[in-house]
Image (cartoon, rainbow, N blue to C red; front, side, top):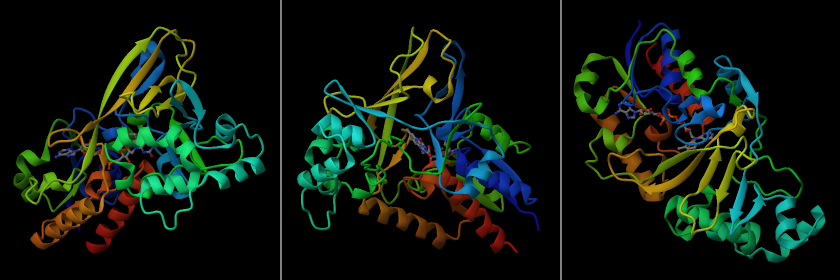
Amino acid sequence: MPKSILVVGAGFYGAVCARELFDLGHSVHVIEKRVHIAGNCYTRPKLECGCHEHVYGPHIFHTNSKKIWDYISRFTEWTPYVHRPKARYKGVLYSLPVNLRTFQQIYGVSTPEQARRKLESVRHKIESPDNLEDWCLSEIGPDIYERLIRGYTIKQWKKDPRELPPSIIKRIPVRLNDNDNYFDDRFQGIPKNGYTSIFERLLEGIPVDLNTDFLQERDYWINRYDHVIYSGPVDALFNYESGTLEYRSLRFNSVVEKVADFQGVSQINETDESVPYTRVIEHKHFNGDFSKPASLITYEYPEDWSAGKTEYYPIETAISRSKHRAYIEQLDQLGLPITAGGRLGDFRYYDMHQVIGSALRSVQTLAQSWK
Ligand code: FAD
């Protein structure tokens, strides 16, 4: 029996759920509070610079899952891309992620064996490090930690690294060879025509209302549909009645530089605590046209979050996670026909491929429960 389904949010979670439920024969309607689709992955053409602008921060698609890669490749062609960011500390550019070049720059060693021995000698011996700083000191020692990680982390999270879980940093590989590919995954790329084109294709044939905030008339929407897929923050869904979860927000300042190539690389992390921004992005390096004599540069500033601002990053502390669990339990107890998911609904620091995987699983679970 076909259901009528409202999908709240046209990011990856909402758009993949919408596509799959629509293809299973259900009646699907998408609403999105922004004036465009694609959530935080939204890109738009910047013709004078010959590139797509990654409006809410740079997005590199990467996954180890052939299933996810094949799925999303139904909706786009790819420009092959390998992410090789750099870190700038006190005016010096370092190779990132940590690899043999980084060891050479900092310690003057040049072979994997020398780097391994150096690493052994500088590592702090900490048994079961349970915070980000201790974990870094025991993995990479104080020099690399100071130049590549510490200042960046403090700016990004506005927290003492000793209060943060090591899981935030475990994403960064440490290599004793020349491999400076930021990601270990088998598949990596940038959509040839920008991310927004993926969402146009995902949402083909499905009605979408932009500029429409579910929370303005929550009960009205719930009463009109059999089921709601919600990809916004769950604390906002309950009007913050049991308190807010923790988030970090961002501000982007973009300028056009009158040069074909401004910094030679897509991303420079500013790891010096005294520089107020965390990253400098040159969008053209993702898949742009270097014959154009102009380039779009974005400076990314971390900001405090308060209700009404965009929740770019969930801060997954133990307190936040338990508050999130309590909100989800409340959803169940009230018997509301709502599935919360995605980065905000699940309150997880998900990458795009993880959100797509989670959306596919949510649809499977729902379809099963409706049989
Ligand atoms: P979103 O993309 O946030 O979509 C949710 C949508 O719901 C939004 O459009 C929002 O406006 C809408 N919405 C919320 N509340 C309501 C409401 N009440 N009514 C109507 N609409 C509502 N991932 C990678 O894999 N690689 C990267 O390089 C990468 N870089 C990133 C850089 C930055 C700066 C950020 C912030 C994230 C990055 N990510 C990256 C993560 C990626 O953006 C997310 O995994 C993905 O966008 C999450 O999709 P989503 O649908 O859960 O959320």
